[in-house]
Image 1 (cartoon, rainbow, N blue to C red):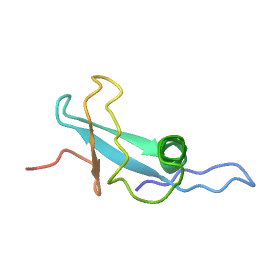
Image 2 (image 1 turned 120 degrees about the horizontal axis):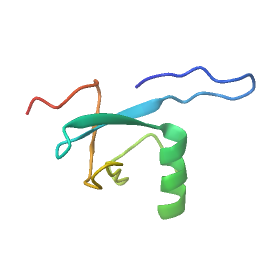
Image 3 (image 1 turned 90 degrees about the vertical axis):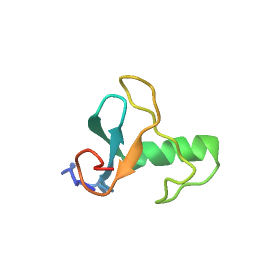
Length: 74
């Protein structure tokens, strides 16, 4: 997960890096955005992704969360 600096008074929860197999590219999404999606679809939020599906912004295919940046070697 990456951390970004934010202004005073705002807590930074970082982001998650995702990989799209179809486009062969990585992109990141902030946890706060993921929590908004979870709250709208499930009614609760948490640091998990097993029931939250993130699509590639370019092609719309489901993307995989990565622990490390870069394409999945498998």
